[in-house]
Amino acid sequence: MTKARSAPDVWIIVTTLLILTIGIIMVYSASAVLAFHEYGDWYYYLKRQLLFAALGIGAMFVTMNADYYIWKKYANLILIVCFALLVIVLIPGVGVIRGGARSWLGIGSFGIQPSEFMKMGIIIFLAKMLSNEQMRMEHFTKGLLPPLGFIGIAFGLIMLQPDLGTGTVLVGASILMIFVAGARLLHLSYFVIAGVLGFIGLILMNTERLDRITAFLDPWKDPLGSGYQAIQSLYAIGPGGLVGLGLGMSRQKYNYLPEPQTDFIFSIISEELGFIGGAFLLVLFMILIWRGMRAAITAPDKFGSLLAVGIVGMIAVQVIINIGVVIGMFPVTGITLPLVSAGGSSLTLMLTAIGVLLNISRYSR
Image 1 (cartoon, rainbow, N blue to C red):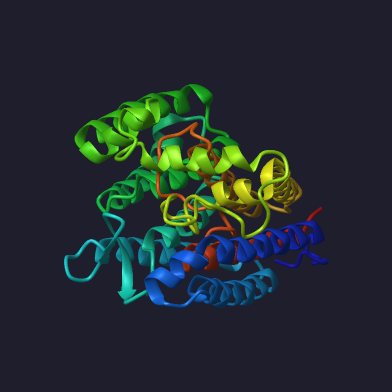
Image 2: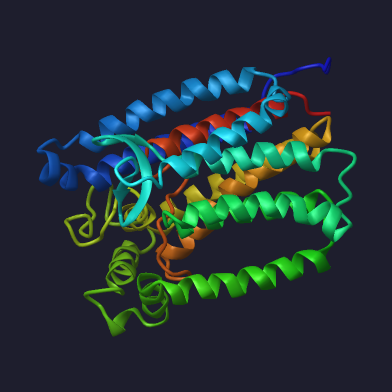
């Protein structure tokens, strides 16, 4: 490839760093009390977030300067490694159980989450597969079924952990790529119907998931059990009002709201910074998604375009689900807010993916 390369999209860089900065501040604010109770160190989660943010920024700088078409060359190998990690994590005694899911590999508090790697791995592989000129996406068997097969296997392995939230993000981003690649809406509707029926089946097969659905419909039916998280999240958002209680002044972080530094960090943001603070963060995400889609539209080839669509889709779907859970629109799932929630694998991988997106923006037509 001999395409002219320019400067990366400054909007994406600035927006990403702003969201990351807000995340670091709010991780400390939301987690200080919890960190002191658990580890005797007010700065425990802050130090971890700074460490992984530094690693992520370093990875973003590398991928921003590594021509994106190199990912096409290693797409098959990347997918094989991701599948291998998903299998290894399921082995008893090897995979670490956290939050009721065997989804981690590592020692002690440091580990990696293979499902996070699979999200990026399937996006890279699908971008290569769908950009192949021999793929006839208007045909159901020749075009649509092969990518759906890979998505189904990845989703199935993730559900064996089980991790419905991450699996939903993976499927959502993948389906967006398939649609952009030219799949017919009629064919996709078949998949959506089958997916909804399968989703209902997965819920009915697991009492914990069923409890989450009933708690979503009526959290007050079990306010101290399955409905507890949803109620406490709304208790955080409500008092925030327009301008919030003030940075560091959250009440719900005092062991009322579970996971205030990860899944429900937007609740703390709304409580401390109010509607204005929450809306400002959402505007930043909208700018990031807008500029990412612009990079996809102006990419010089189909692979780059689909790769950008997948990365933007991953960010958008994750933001929608996380915010939806926090405000009570969706049942509770273990989905973090990109670049904001405390995390290791998720934060580092997200910054790495944004670096790839920045590299694609350097070749804009």
